[in-house]
Length: 112
Image (cartoon, rainbow, N blue to C red; front, side):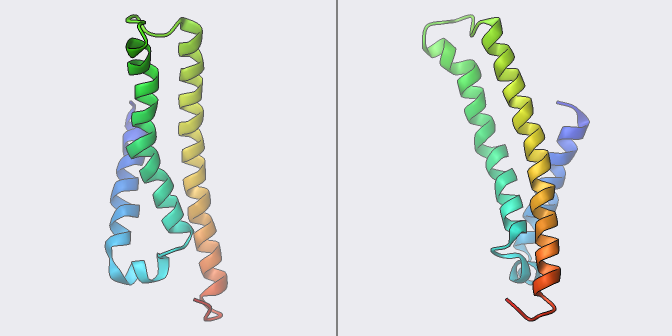
């Protein structure tokens, strides 16, 4: 994995996760799009990657194919993996931008 992807994961863990632990920040962000952005990235990193690994590597071996899937299936897996990674890199900033736009609209009006 390249440095760019490790940096994005580090940014995710250090910024979104840490901010949610601070009470003054959590007071304003709890239940907003920022929470959704953090949740989507955390779920993707913790569970989706493990599931993709099991489906791609362990499942063929458990089903009696010690050499893994055929080349065509591996190409489909490769494309699917990168499509999901790219979409997660798009959905998280979109949800974060949605949070900032929604908070700028609702906060001055006193809506909580």
